[in-house]
Image 1 (cartoon, rainbow, N blue to C red):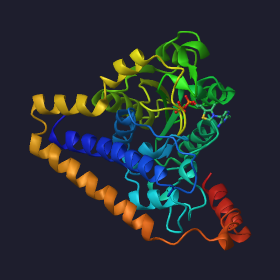
Image 2 (image 1 turned 180 degrees about the vertical axis):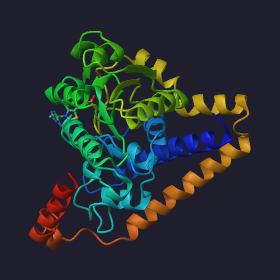
Image 3 (image 1 turned 120 degrees about the vertical axis):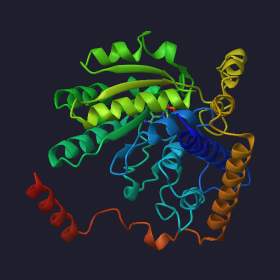
Length: 334
Ligand SMILES: Cc1ncc(C[n+]2csc(CCOP(=O)(O)OP(=O)(O)O)c2C)c(N)n1
């Protein structure tokens, strides 16, 4: 923990927070292509801590609430905002929207609207890493709702049996839509759950970016050494409703107040200041820089042409030649 770490951690968290606040603003202005948009405000420390533990060659799989994961991985804010606005210059040429953003150049294998769907994809990536010895670890982020899906069990089981380099991170924000975590599963911590798969489990304070980073880094090092997967439960809270239009009437206002008191950004600022990692000036500069980046992103997106109907069916299938050439290459590597 030092100045460099603090700059990166705060930079990521501020960018996630401001990007999502701007997203809600442009949504209210009717500028998004779809009203389907899930923000992770309150959960920024998980995305930042996990992605900071990654190396350039690593992979990441993400969820319907995934803006923060890509931002912390270094995603392009302009292309993200353009995607949300349904513009030609967006990550998926404006055809995917918030829940399908992918950036293969960053090893980001895609956000996924199917709860738990990408846990299987992460295991596939982990298997590829093991077979090709590419020294990559896959960070697999999912919500607490995914823990009760069948694929969670199948994926952890297979990753454990093959000792795959995958780090499973449950971003436990306490609710799957309106279903509280306490009502969806018995009160078992992640350390105990992981023991059923003979892998280490870590329960961590998801509002503490340094703690998340340490847990993710330890797990990534273990995976890279060839010692197999780890399950991390990062306990956090979404400050807003499930998606736009959800006033969270099912939540106790007192519970919301308690969690908002543990907002990861002010918590980290106070710690960084008292430890001497950051000065007030450093923090003001980071905030100004993030605000400018949001203005640039919105401007880039607004200036772009809308997605074209004519390309709606492009990129759905790989060209047959390219597909078989790639398969041949992979088979020869195996
Ligand atoms: C397989 C599947 N079942 C149901 C849904 C509908 N759905 C969308 S988000 C969601 C809740 C997911 O909760 P969680 O995994 O905890 O993530 P969070 O929204 O809290 O980030 C549900 C049930 C879906 N998209 N996919």
